[in-house]
Image 1: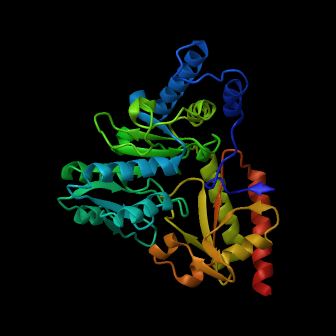
Image 2: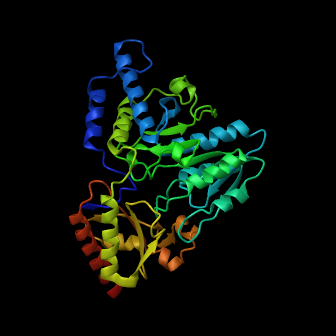
Image 3: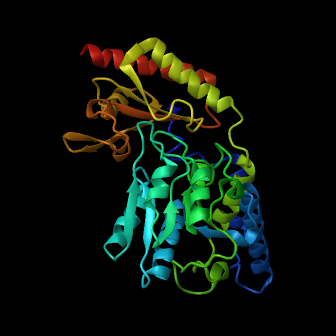
Length: 375
């Protein structure tokens, strides 16, 4: 099997597993306990906090551990709405946000939140001027993803940050897809909040973190005892938190070293050589994640291509509902024609991907598409 679905989830890295094991086998103390076992796990949690902070260019006190990226996003959106609900609140998001941002915003709209969804161009890019025009006196938050999970387009977060600063508005970015792929330093981006998901960069599922810039207070999402300095109740999942810290150290702060980008380009070139203009690129031709290639196969259904494709694992760009197919909301927002959008497939590479796998995968994809086009 050739795994080309790293944007969906990544395998847990060997060093990450090794870091976890002592906290699964031996060190089972509650970090809030005052005895020796509690001290061991408490120190481990704080070391992981430092590792994540170092990766993001933050300070340890700005890191809150969560169950994943979805919880981190919900914490920002619901925590800020709760704080400003009585005074009135307006949020700005993009039309291609992950459901972990779009769905909470839709939920909050029913409770009185005003939301503006700024459009994207045919490459999936937000125009900062559209963000600027959307700001109102009641705007409290701009939330724009760092890079899109489906097509990989990287958003101009630094430019949007300048608009947020000028307007006195806080800025959040969902960086679940960018950690370990491109630099995501919080100060370079100029963000006030940043969400990460461990399983996207070689930690196990079930752990993530939220960066909250020092000096900002938002309401808690999970209430209870005073864990995480009162910001997120619940006994810490020490093995997973240790794993998150180890994964942060494993991927570092600089992102892809160029190898994965080269392999991704190689896959695209091989598909064009074999299929010509039957292959259409979705997303920005250059300003996208180095590991992500979203292409549509003209006249075909992406999900059906994957079903016929032997031992190459990737994701379709359309949702299947019983006997009918619908294009993804992201491709719709980009204005991709329906017949093209239905043929979309996302291939996402990772650190373990080899040149041999790319050559083999390309051959299998080309053979499958040619066979389906003839039938």
